[in-house]
Length: 367
Ligand code: SF4
Image 1: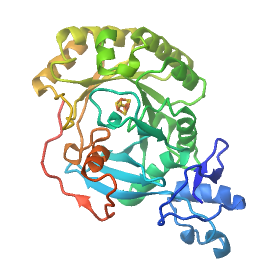
Image 2 (image 1 turned 90 degrees about the vertical axis):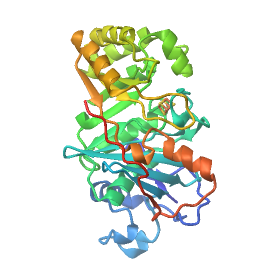
Image 3 (image 1 turned 120 degrees about the horizontal axis):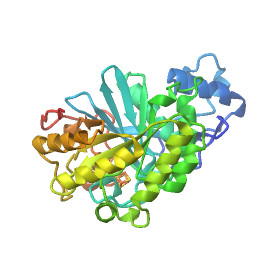
Image 4 (image 1 turned 30 degrees about the vertical axis):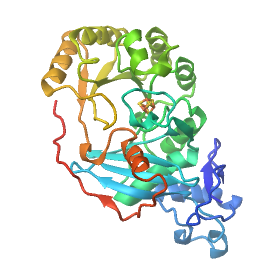
């Protein structure tokens, strides 16, 4: 039986049932939880047979991983995207972004997504289910093993809305920042949300010195409701109020994420409205140029427009970063690999060795 991490840092049997013959149906051994937990997280040893200071009669009885890599896509800029098959046959994506001595993992938290962002491939097909704590953490183990790296930074910015899967995300964060487990500094952990005011306030009370990123993507309610239908009942004012409370209680800066869509939200007026919000929150803005999705009617703005938008924000005293588009040749935008796999063959088994060759060399964006 596969395990999941519980709130009090123990491992327990996972609620996800497997019909996959390659995944084990062994029983857990409670006495070993603490040892297994730290061995798995700190040393990335996931194969019980390699936990050599445990008697074989124990290691033969349990397993840790109930997911496996079915596709690996490596980009020319070193970004790596894994398509991971979960025990119940669902797929999620995980991305490694190595840069400037940091190894950042972009974690998925749900299978699919219910938020309905019009520009996103992850929401096509809707939400299937929340990921368990164990499934979220296994993404780190898979990346560390497949890419032979130690993860230094974690962003909850992959498939799904993290604050909808609140309990599992918070449990995962506690495991990630626990020095006896993954040992990543809380300051290097970012939770990115579309903005669910009550859940932002709840997160503020968790005593976790993490960074909160609000995916704004539109500077007014009317445009936001068109781009993000699920945000229809949440006003920008309510999100900003909750973000201010998060800042006040945690003294951790909030970041605004803004996806630039050509001729949609990249006008001068949009820049000025966004600058007002950023000034109210006294926060930085990350501009992200859109990573096109084949079946969706959006395009990234030109470099000239991106620079002009950035300059407009800076004119209002905002600290702005343009996030480089990484892994354009690996279907790196949220949900694209999973979506493409589903389109090609929903049932297809792809061998772990089957790596995708980059089909197009597209230079990363520059500021
Ligand atoms: S952008 Fe994020 S919140 Fe929106 S649909 Fe995609 S995964 Fe969900």
